Each structure stands twice: as structure tokens, then as C-alpha cells.
Image (cartoon, rainbow, N blue to C red; front, side, top):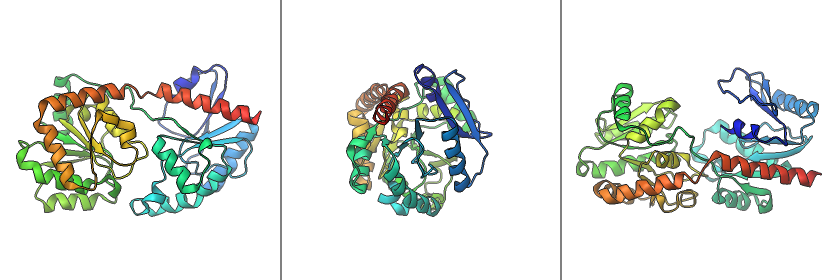
Length: 350
């Protein structure tokens, strides 16, 4: 998707540096070249090789779209990084120890040498600038967007696929987003338990790769006697995610901290009514198209879920608002803004 947008830019040439033997397929275009790095390089050799690639190809701007870790600290061109959020600094207890150590060690150093930072929301921009006392004029906002696969699907096809693939033949509330403590799953499960007997046995479905935080969530489900109603699907291939969204009666996303948050927009793009947190970037991204809750209040989460499920007209209105909002986000817009940033940085260099 993104490389196809860059292919339409006939004024500039692009070199994509990517790990070898990747399953990613890139668009073939005259202005796009691919340089595949050997897999499993340590940080020292990765930095050396990237620096040589930059010099040999006379690169003007090097953009690292994932926080900049691994960027050569000795600059040979203009640098841009995308920094989605600073969760390791704000909520360090919710991040794995290895990633926490690397992020907190290198990101402050990286910010000192880059020419510009791209982030995904005004909230994240403010958070980055305040925490690091960083110049706001060097930080640009480009929103993320749901992929084209997230859209309303034929109901019979959805029902058939869910039953055959996952054994789902019941109405359900959906959560997507992982098991980290900052995802707030324990409060969601407790809220679900509070209202389970009032919602006609609507189940709760939770897909996602089982992480180190999964045991706490699973043990809570067992403790509350919810094993029959709360379903963990483990890893779900991307091509089946639109079916999971489409089959849901309601999508709930009670995250404590998010720089942007794609899952609510993916749900909205599938025309699923959505409840999300009223904290961090969520109000900015979702506006009035989601019903916002206090993620620290189990009671508020429970009451709002119950309200949506028991009010058909409100639920329908919410799904329409969400569907309309999701259409405002697109990767084409994001790429266009990113190209504008490249042009500004190049002009400053010239």
C-alpha cells in the first residue's frame, strides 16, 4: 500500500532498506529500489551497513518509520524518524525489560541528532515535546489509517467463516489489541462479568498472540467462572480479522494509553459500533464517533457496554458515525503529508 503511493511520486527516487527473506511484497517501480539486509544483524553491524548504503547511494533523507533505533549515530544525510508514542517512558511497567532498556537508552540520543520527528497524533506530539523539552516545530503529525481490507462484508459469508474457522456461532463483544497491562483487559473482563446476566449471553472474544501478560488475564477469567463466555483465539491471520470485526455486535477498546490506536478505526471501517477510552489520543482520533469511557472505572465500562447493547437505535447511530469517520483516514493522505515533510527537510538542507 505505502510503496504504491511512493511509486506515484515521479519527482523523487526511493531506496527501501529491509531484512532479507521477508514475506513483504514491494511494488515494482522505476523510482523504487530495494536493498535487503542480511537477517539477524546485531546493532553494530546494522549501523555500519546502513551508513555505507547511505553514502554509496548519495541519500538525501533517511527515514526510519519505527522510533529510529538502529539509525547510524554518525550522520551522513538528513534524518527523520517516526515515533508513535513514548510508552516506555510513561508506563515502563507495561513494557518488556529488553525493549524498555533499548528504548530508554537510545531514543533520547536519537532525538538529539534527527532533523525531524513524525508522530501519529497531536496528543503524541505534545507528549514527546513536553517529556523531552523538544522543539514542536520539528515534530509533524501524520495519522495512521485502517487498511482497505477492513470494510463491511456479506453477513452470511461472515457467519460461515467464523463458524468454520473459529467455532463462533454466538453473538459477541470484540476486543483487539494484545495483553499488555496498559490494554486494561482485567477491567474489561470484570466489567463484562458485572453485566453478563443482563445481555442475553453475548460472549466476549479476544484474539491476539499470547504474551507474558496472558496468564493474569486467563486466570481472572477462570476465577470469575467465565471460561464458557470469554474466548481467547490466540494468533489470528490478518486475512481473517475483517471477519472477526464484522461479526461483532460491539467493539470495546479500554486502553490506558495509546499514541493513535488502529483497532477502533478498523472496527468502525467494518461498521461496528465502538466503545473506547476517553484518555490520551482516543478523543482526538475517534471524536464523537465512539462512546468514550473512563478506562480506570470498571463500573463506567460496564454501564456503557450495557447501554449500547440495550439501545438498538443508539447502536445503529454509533455504527454509522464510526463508518463515516473511518473514511476520513487513509494512507494516501498520510503519504501525501509525509512527502510534504520530506520536501521541507530537503529545502532546509539545500
